[in-house]
Image (tube, rainbow, N blue to C red; front, side, top):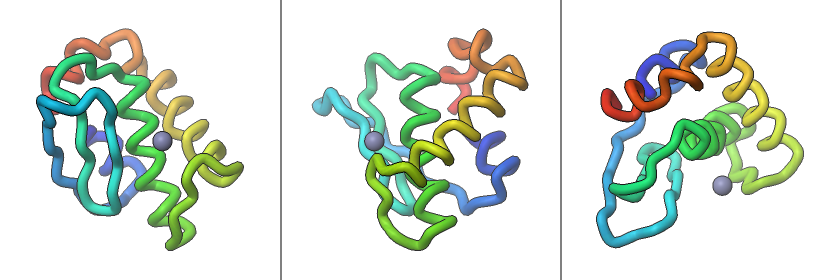
Length: 93
Ligand SMILES: [Zn+2]
């Protein structure tokens, strides 16, 4: 997570782990993740929400602009081989 922030040069988000929630949410400065079931895909998804917000200064939800940012995150993660090391990463976030 921190590596992604550094690469895409956006402000750090505070991470909150929510035990009671099943779904993850991303706000502009913090990301809420369910305590269980954290996957690298979920991290990319939520991270892309913030990236889209920083780029366009508005909430993109899941529109085309968001999809484009999401693609960039996923490509970067795959290139860096983080995808395969996802377990290791999720333990470090
Ligand atoms: Zn979403």
